[in-house]
Length: 75
Image (cartoon, rainbow, N blue to C red; front, side, top):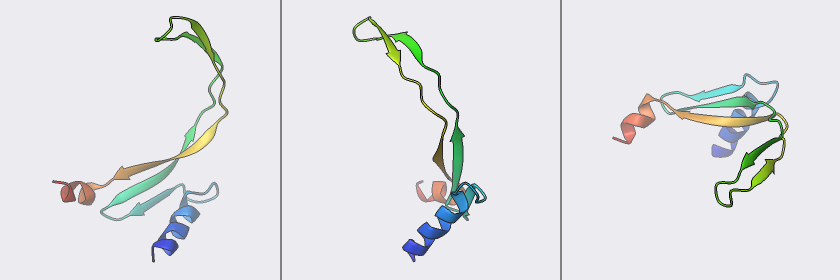
């Protein structure tokens, strides 16, 4: 059963899927877009030297949000 649930979640959050899966009363899983980040320089808080942070391309991530039913279980 859990394997099939995993397949169902994957189908929903893939690029061509709905981008969101809800398990009623428990949780909501969303695919989120993370924008690209430019290369930047900053001062290291440990050594006080200037360092360069590499650029990162745009990517997709997953955000899981507990719903009210799950929050009530934790009380």
